[in-house]
Length: 241
Image (cartoon, rainbow, N blue to C red; front, side, top):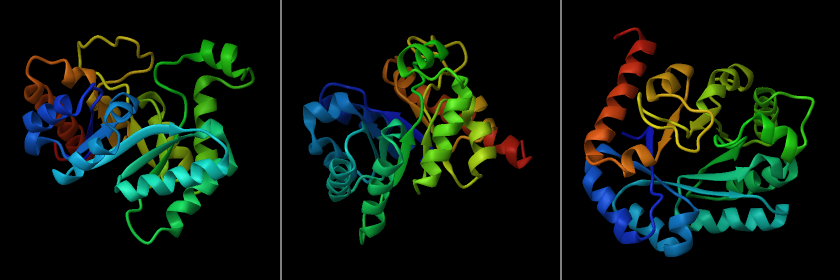
């Protein structure tokens, strides 16, 4: 299942290898974030590519444009399929990053702008970011428009904002949604969450799922459950369910 991205938020490559082996042919796409990348570096990406998997390298780059352009080029050398920048880094930073992708001859990843993290709420937006003239949803849409204007492929946003982002930026604008929790599952530190079905019905292109699968007694069973929910939702959209 390519539209399900399993987050390998684990400590070692051995931990990651065990999960990939358990999920086997069920999952084609995996996220490598700070936790695994800092400990294992490019070996984590290399392992996944050797297994024929796609890699979402989620390092949320945010720095001066030249530094980010060079970082994106380095990531393309690893063969990653999806990559994130913080949209709060601004238009120029994102545009330089995207130009690095356009200039490449091969291994061009989808480049995504992170909007507002799903663990954050409106109080954070006002108190920390200092945005007081827009609601959280309005800020997410503002950032999504900025990401699109810089030429990026899409955004990472909570499932609550997917529908509005698609209406604002178009159906071809990719939306990747973390904050996915099956029915009855504890939301933990996530503020803006939805079920797999709700996210797909809203128009999400990819769902990122970590703890519900990683911490499940039966990881494969949980992945199958989530995939089934996703497929049933897609059937409803097609009118075939």
